[in-house]
Image: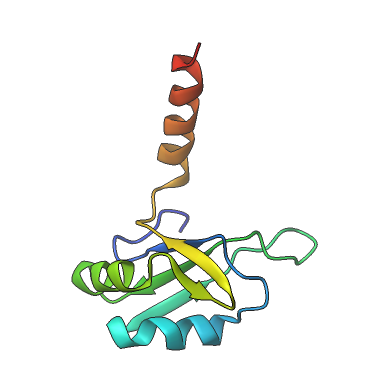
Length: 100
């Protein structure tokens, strides 16, 4: 757990009024949706992004091409490949150190 599957494009910024079932139906034309995960804060509010896991990388790639920058509930959503949290943090830290 915690490390995204290669077939998992994350969505960001995620419209708070969009349900997991709606995401499943939006992504199902691109392939078999195995899981939809909408991370929440301790208070139950959505964190502003979601993960949609498709059956395999080719299906995820189709979803990424088909859904990136599409509007969901009136908000354009960026779809990209999921990156493990530790790798993401490493890239963010490296950028800050290189500035100046």
